[in-house]
Length: 356
Image (cartoon, rainbow, N blue to C red; front, top):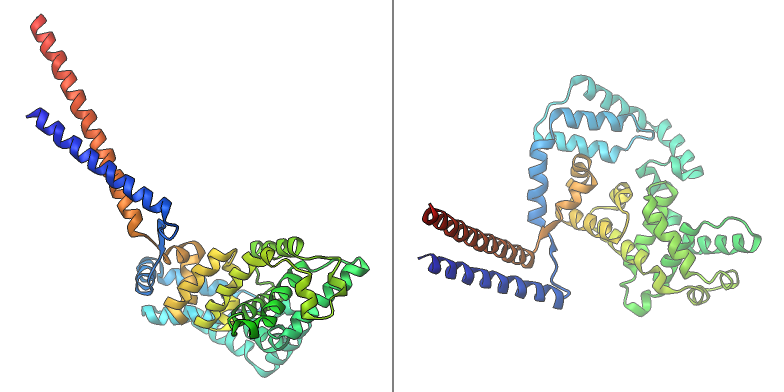
């Protein structure tokens, strides 16, 4: 009987080993098979709703609103998203907090406040609220005029020995390159241009993460022929002065920023841009935006970056097969070792009994 059991466990071991080997070979031979896949829209909605069920408590939402009220300028995009989430969850906020919200809204949206704030925004983009940034800065930042100005400023600074704004230059180069390629590409590079323009506006408002800024600086350092740049007088001259491959990571990130804007709007994209450090972050955020739409902001406020991005990923079927194969393999090895140990102990006991 014991031999039969061991034979059965050996068969299971061989089967588990074969399944594990097949899954491993598939993953190694096919680059499209990955352990993690992008979650579907309904999976993202379900995952974020599950987190909200435990985390979106009255105390938590009130604390988030309180924090946003203390900012200068106040972020009404986030505040409105939080109050919408409060209504969605059927939560009653404290009367004192509701009164402060109403008073703050009246102060910030009065005609005098709006006029003075826009004047300050036009002078210093870092002082812009999100809505003011779109009204007062976007007309230049979202057109090729802003890109040309950015490249020109960099060329003048290089010749005169002044500090060069490499982030602005990198984003301007990508924007101009995309604009020049529109006719040849059938319009697909408009996506990159829009992402670059959005990032430039966000940078002026201080809403670009340090890692994304470092990516732009690296592209400018490695991909620009600084000696040729000051002599550039046309888009063709600029194209000749850059190495496109050095800008590839930045271009990939900016493409997904445009996906984010298209799924929501430019103001929402500006608000969420500080969450983006690289192309992977931009892709996760765009995926969440396409699934959640206008509900994204409120959920991002409660979940935070790490948990929000985790909702956009799922373990793939290939990974589950690999995990199952490895689990079966380990269990089979443990069972065989247990059986061998049992047989050894029984033999020792029999010898000891005979000796006695």
